[in-house]
Length: 112
Length: 113
Image 1 (spheres, each protein chain N blue to C red):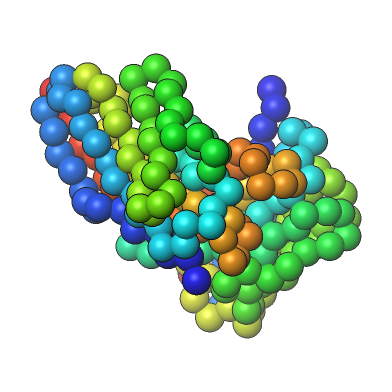
Image 2: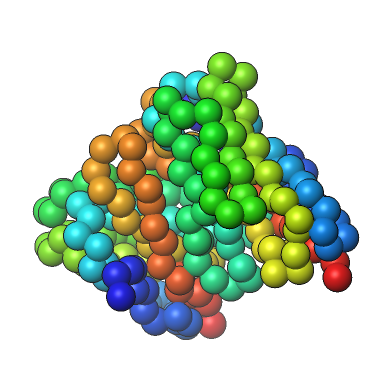
């Protein structure tokens, strides 16, 4: 059964820092991996989708990588801003369950 | 604007009542999903539907029911059999197939009073 883990559970950084959020998954037979952002009390906003055949995707200050062989994905945020403060979730699609399986998220706080 | 609309935003349920959460999408997506989010537990799949008039149970379907009579709509009923319904409920949709991106609504917070 696919399991998705995100470490750390919480992260606090000063404004301007570059940072990396980690996501690991147990079943490498995934079709894609998606990163989301969630603000308190809100729904999920899709940030990046990486197909299984891709190694990375970029959108603005965000870069997500995927290494299926090691079961890992990272989300790199450049020049962090207070507005980046939110919970970031990764979700793997595919494997034996055929649906999005979520990690528990990393709560990011960027201090001015 | 294209997107997913969940209503209501807040919902209060008395003990023993059934309540229905609405989810509508205008993205022309075939697949729709319901997730439950609890603090510290992440998102868990309740039901999903890949096509009209068909749906499958997810990991925590007990105490819930759904219907998919229209492509645009996937309502979730929380029945009295669900013993701990207080949670944040999220609806999502996507195209079918493995390489598609999922989009979420803004959620409904259900509280038992």
